[in-house]
Image 1: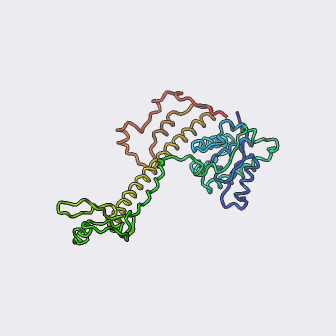
Image 2: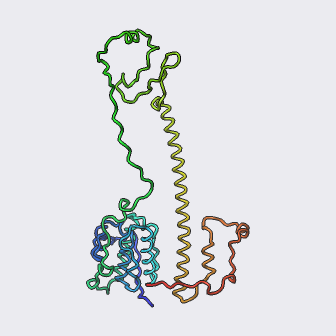
Image 3: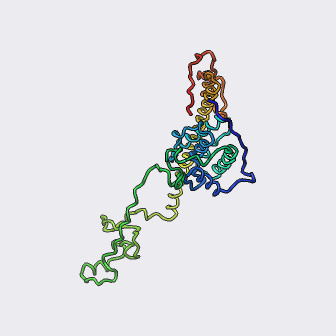
Length: 339
């Protein structure tokens, strides 16, 4: 089915007739009966799909659009519908999906500025009064309170239980200045030399709750020894321990960052392959020709652009060169895209 060709536009951030973010949100909400609070909320892509449904109804299936979603892979699905709709009307606009779905203001504001100009250029013959946006999307609300904000997204990871409240410090049961009965034992203890006296807790004398040593049972010589605790560490030793722990944590953080970057690069690498294969399928469907299996396999086994390929190693691994005759013609059937 042939679709009406659209008028494409060119827009940059330095265009003189750009409108403010508030006017842009008012325009979107008034046209779609939505409730977007921020430009960043347009990162779902649902609003653009409905605008395309207003301009070119046969290019968008509204049942496939996810209007209330907080999942990035469903944002990608919406922008995929938008990309197919633009392609169907002859607009070769590259949508920066990876940037838009992150919900950053600048990227989304630049894209909605372009789309507003595109909509105005193609909406001259559209009767907006006869279009009911709420009915067109099946009565589903759209927008709402910060659907793309970090606080609204489900969080994962390890959840730690709250720390228990610290036990109250026990006061010294015996007052320092309390009167004690004088007995022969206490008189002898008072007369004993200081070295033979039990090591008193520092907490009882200084009034502090964190004792640096506690009294131990007497040894064979009748002397008491203090049991060292963590509080016995000097300030220099404590700083050394903390510095070591900090160094280990920084190394672990650096390793996690490298792993994350590698995962992102690998994701983008395979996503670009899928996108190239999708373009090949769409072109074959548009021209009514069978899908070229050789091109599909060459896309699948093509290396990363930044990684050099050793021909000898490529031959040893059995990859690389693909003979056209090794594929049976018509072995891969094209799946027609449904609009």
